[in-house]
Amino acid sequence: TMLQNMQTKVTEEGKREEDLFHKFMCYCKTSRGDLEKSIADAEAKIEGAGAALKEATEKKAQLDADVKEHTASRDEAKKTMAEATALREKEAEAYAKNKADLETNIAAIAKAVAALEKGAAGAFLQTPSAAAVRTWAMERADLPDESRQELLAFLSGGDAEGYVP
Image (cartoon, rainbow, N blue to C red; front, side):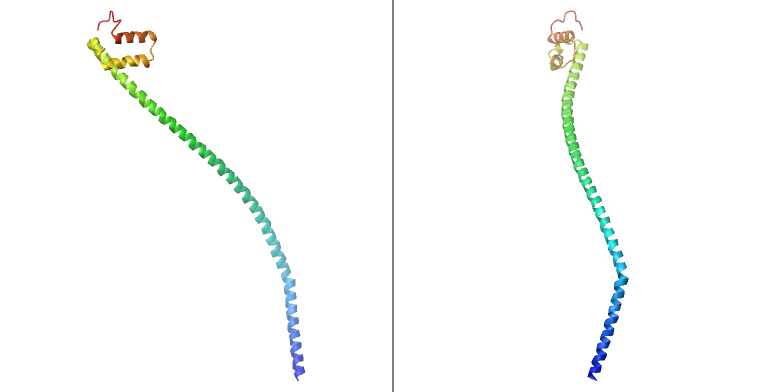
């Protein structure tokens, strides 16, 4: 009986192993197609990912070049703006100085005209306004030489023959 029990047990184990063998063989036969499809899909994904990686790398290189170019362009624009600002400030300073000089000269000429109209030419020639007009005529005025000489002679008090206010 013990031998019979063992024989029954061994037979049952053999049958179980045979069932498992058939089950695994069936799994191997049926799942092979699924595994091959899965492998093919994975290989296609790898190729697609490689192409996408290459495209992304090229795009990154292009963007890096664009950033470098735009940075240089921005730096150049900043430099140009700084130069233009400095030039504008210099020109504004020169303009303000020139404007002040011209306003002073205009005021002096207005006083000279007013004095001349009143007939006080001799008194006018002694004023700071006459000195300002004389300086303007000598240094800055865009006058022909003959007119400049007449004006300077008048302001100096000489060569006033024939002039009656």
